[in-house]
Image: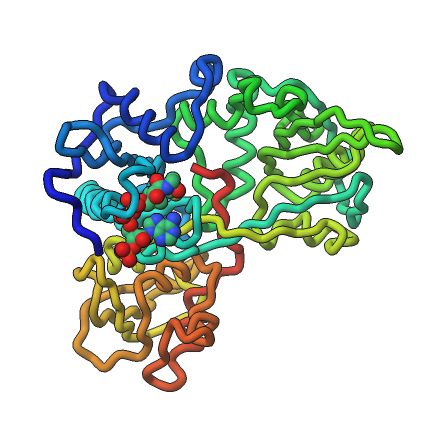
Length: 421
Ligand SMILES: CC(C)(COP(=O)(O)OP(=O)(O)OC[C@H]1O[C@@H](n2cnc3c(N)ncnc32)[C@H](O)[C@@H]1OP(=O)(O)O)[C@@H](O)C(=O)NCCC(=O)NCCS
């Protein structure tokens, strides 16, 4: 790993350096928000969790921050440091600034008692070397207008309204439906801070790309309770054959199948439109099961959440397991040696939410050898350790131990974080 150049050092970056912090990020990501956008979009950063690398002249060469999250894991929840706003000035690239910031981020997260870190990766090749594993995928669909759905009883009894989305008026509706829709799904981080809840509905004109203001489609039941929503925009477009407006859904959630059916039936049948592109959905989303022609919905798969186990025994004991297992893992972790070595993972009691486990140091012979990156990838239950073994990335040392280990780590619901942070 590249050490920092002489005279460079990692530092906390407090709120009074906000302008400087953001300037580095804008340079790294090649954008500059206009004044109106900055006014409208809430500042979500937690300024006691922002940091960077200072150069010898005292200016910042790189920055990052993190959010204080509760990460849903199979059968439970774990404190998680959500890494964000990672940027290094283009003229300081490949000099070890990110590496130094990652060490700083790990140390500070562990000090705060956060056994796990998670992130969305701008590019897939960046974070594996630091022990982050790609722990989930998401799918986006591009459905033709009128795409048929299989029937769901109760859908017709629900009502639908469309309005212009409003940060103040719709914040609570969206939050409550979203949280209920994701209950029990690993990775489904709910927006805890007010700034994050408001930013979900932010709609500065610069983000509209010629489309209409952000609209909200809300589904209610007979007693008036919200059951589903979609935040979307249409874009006026005329072709040789007439109107062909695309519909782009930014965010959606539904608490059950009837609500999802009502929501998507409405969105798929808007006048003047030709196709609907969905937001990020879990790979087992019910819409995929309801579509008569899934192939026609052109599913596009991409990586979703990345997970890094920082305090391995605490992290592994914080989740539940799908089946009983007693296995000795030989873990490689070049960056955090406290995690490396042999760990016995043994399930204890079975509860309604799966098997609890104890994780302890051992000198016993190892059964399965795994890098912390693959363990992070399998942590949310959405990637198979057996598939990694098949790819040569995990090794079964004791015959017959891989299958039960992989089965224990798996989970019935596919993981997804429904928003990019
Ligand atoms: C990605 C970024 C943060 C990397 O910062 P950096 O200071 O150049 O990274 P480092 O010098 O510490 O590199 C550490 C290692 O990662 C590798 N690496 C860094 N960025 C990489 C990338 N985009 N793709 C592949 N490898 C990369 C380096 O080659 C180096 O490898 P080595 O240890 O074998 O020498 C920086 O290039 C950047 O700001 N890019 C634009 C914004 C961005 O993508 N941010 C990430 C948001 S999730």
